Length: 197
Image (cartoon, rainbow, N blue to C red):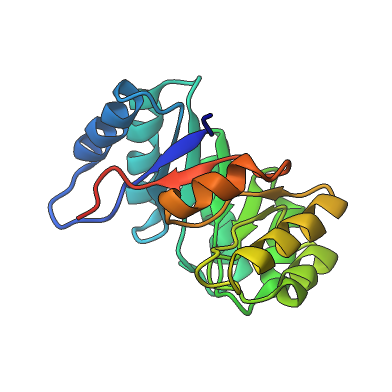
């Protein structure tokens, strides 16, 4: 009758300071979400730490905090500087740290940090997801039924992931994915955008 959902937000907006981000994340928790996601990777190390520190402080230690880098980094040393800083704030995952074709750096990052790597929102077909799985590029897969090949292909991707013991957390479209998460044993959360603007 229900599925867990996380509030997706924390976007970079001109003039939005860490205190504004903190208030946004706290509002999601007040609305009943026990998991939230924010954008990361756009600022320098000091700016990024101020943002994540404010968010974690605002939501408390009991709320899951997810991080979405949206392909922010092009090399492993840079990504590691940020992800190692993020580690102390206990992120649930780092999403799309590199471009979607850079499986190798995703693999290297996965091996270098305890933070789970998530990706897959623009991937198409179970074979491409199988590449990610077999190479160890991510342990949380984020297929989007509107992109990956439809509902049937989403289900095949989820079954493939399940056979490797991996979690599926679909990207976007909560109204579509709520049904798929409810019927997929290895699916964990639905992504929900409280601000549809």
